[in-house]
Each structure stands twice: as structure tokens, then as C-alpha cells.
Image (tube, rainbow, N blue to C red; front, side, top):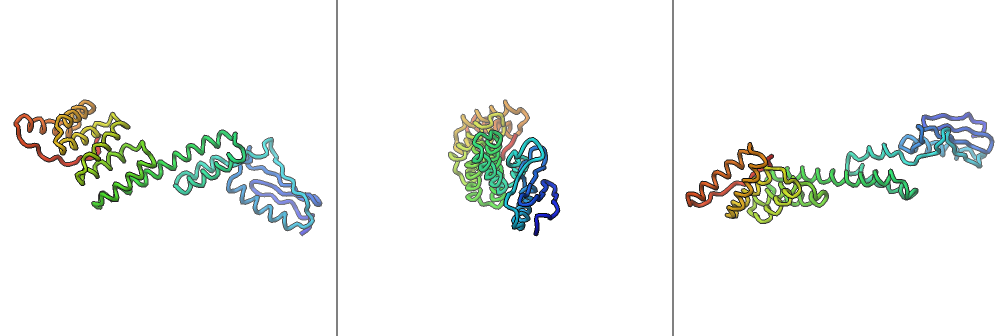
Length: 253
């Protein structure tokens, strides 16, 4: 090829030749943010320039005031819809921060990407744990919910579900510990107190059970499960009869 070749124009850039000088002009939006489209066109353009043996200088400029804003952060943020996409986004932010340690927007979005990745992973593990319970595999469900909790320690429903799985295999101390953590994270959920009350009944700790039922009813007077459980246990205590077994509940209100 010769330097007299006509100038080329693409969506994000133009390329022109003037003897030994090739000029590449960026015109991708107002900030020339580097996204997939611009990267593809740059790669193609560099190949074109390399094929011109007489070109010794490649001049890169912008047709606007800003030369390049770096990575297209909106594109990067869009990659957060899956775990693998989150990894790619985080890697992009890492590179942007490496190039400019004071790039505050990249630092902020990287932090959000890490949080989103944890939420995505914990949600996926939570749902898999539910499927294991449906299949009667408490041990696998407990393992998945433990991983979900490690990824997101604020996931109160994971503590409730793991507690229910422990209750299903009669490990009531572990169940109560998980219910208590869920209550700490979300103390306005009446159903959590009802569920823990049932676990205390299974351990024959009736004063604690009634206290939890009372709190559940205070938070939600319409929670019939707590009202019925409170009446049942109170009647059994009053009549001096043996306490019946309570089936572990489900996450309620």
C-alpha cells in the first residue's frame, strides 16, 4: 500500500495519511471513552497503519477538547449482570486505577462492583440451597447457605433457612443461633421470632418460647401462627401436660 491511500472513516475514529505521517482522530462521544466498539476499531486501524511500510509516525488526536476519558465506565458497569461479568468489570476498574490512582469514579464503581458480585453469588447459592431442601438434602443446603452467608453476612434469610435446615436434623442450638442472628439483622420480622419460639419449644425452654411468641404478636397481631402457638403452649403449661412437639416453621412475616 502507499501513503496516497484514501482516508478511512469509521464510527468512532478517522484515519488519514500524509506522506510518512498517519493521523488517527478519535471522535467517540464527547469524552472518547474507551469501550468495546472503539477498541475494535483501534485494533483494525493499527493493522491498516502497519501495512503502510512508508509510514513512520502515527499521530493520535481528538476532534474534541478531551483526548480520552479512559474506560467507558457505563459499559463496564453493564457487565455486572453475572459473576463472570463482575470479574471483568472489576479487572477493568483495577486497570483504570492503576493508570490513574486518583480516578475517584473508578474507585467508587469498583467498590460497587465488588458488592454486586457478592450479592449475585450469595443469591445464587441461596437459591441452590432451597432446591437442596426441596430434595431432602439438608447437608448440601446447609453448605450452600453457609457459603451464601460468607459472601453476604447481612443476608438474614440465609440464616433463617440454614436454621430451619438445622432444626430439621434436630440441631436446635445451631438453629436458634442462626435465628438469633437473623433477628439481629432484621428485628422487625415477626415471623423470625415465631420460628425461634418453635425451636425453644423443641428444647422445652418454654419461657423463652412464649417471650418470642409475644414479640411476634406485638410486631404483627395478625400472625396467626404465633397466636396459635402461644395459646397452645400456654394451655399445655396451665394444664400441666407434656409439651407437644412443634414442627419447625417457615420464614413468615
